[in-house]
Image (cartoon, rainbow, N blue to C red; front, side, top):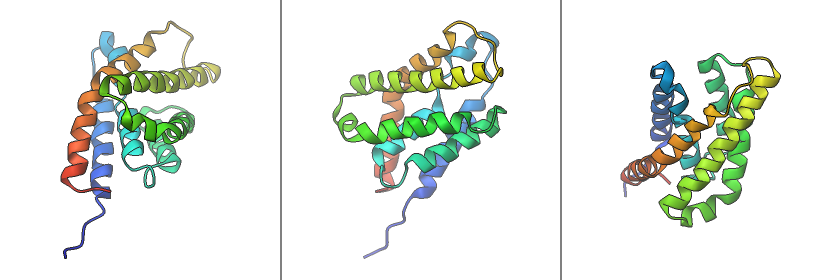
Amino acid sequence: MTPRSNGMWVVVLSFLVAYLLAIVPFPEWAMHYRPQWVMLVLIYWIMALPYRIGIGSAWMAGIFTDILEGSMLGIHALTFAVLAYITLSVHQRLRLFSSLQQSGIVLALVGLVMTGTYWIKVMTAQTAPGGMLFLLGALSSAFVWPWLFMFLRQLRRGFDIR
């Protein structure tokens, strides 16, 4: 019997790719359409490995996002922790939904997190109040979710990550 690796390197690598996709330059007119890659990867891994990826992992992912974006330390950490808590509380039901239903839930979760982040940035004067265009990222994230879910599931099954 050969020992099975724990596969955490695959999880870390998927987060690194998500961070790289999060900083890919977009034209100014398309910045609001950028999918929230880190949140999507976080939601997937919380659903797939709820006993290994949780609120602490979400907090660390949020701190790294704060550092990457140059925002006030803790904004994304707080909202990602809330995202992790909500996802952990519904992950068993979420697994049973179809990909279209999951996309709707992802739209709501990512929209909630983006709204919370936006409100905190407005209250701390990091950004000026504006329209609701920032929520287009939640819409594009919901559109991307089925393909990302299938890709990460194949990756998890291929490396036998449990």
